[in-house]
Image: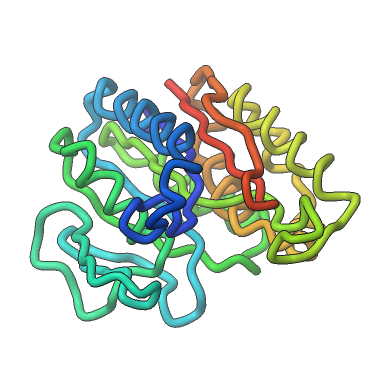
Length: 235
């Protein structure tokens, strides 16, 4: 059963060592993420599942102790997802950011495992996976990583798209209200066109939370680099 969830953005720039001199630009987002992780710990889960977007080689399950790094972003910084023996595969960037968040907040509330979710995964399958996770007997918490559209400004990674603001506003409302039906209704094709990496993970959360009766709170909603970043807490 799902007892709590936190939704956080997953840009490597969230990690100060990666952001360097621009680290202060993500201070508010970072603080909101810390608060959301704190709500997860307060729920006293038996297990924490970290979900994040991943490319084809990095999709699927990551056992406790899986390792990742930010060397691909020019920083010699390694992270570990929880405690365990790990596995042969390196964490995708989204789960590496999550591992950093958990290390930074000294997570010790429950064992941690990861799940890399492919962006093309259709909404129905996302929801089904979420229901499977929440349908287990344990008290499960989810840390859901993912970004909104990457098309909010001319300098955004995906350039400007006039549809981006409305898409992000709908996603923010749904995440802040723990509205699982609204999350499930997000347009997967539009999300792909707007380069919104969080869509599949948010719809997995929709499946996990549809019968949980959790209340949501939107802690952060901004687009500092032309990319929609949201932090939400469900409890």
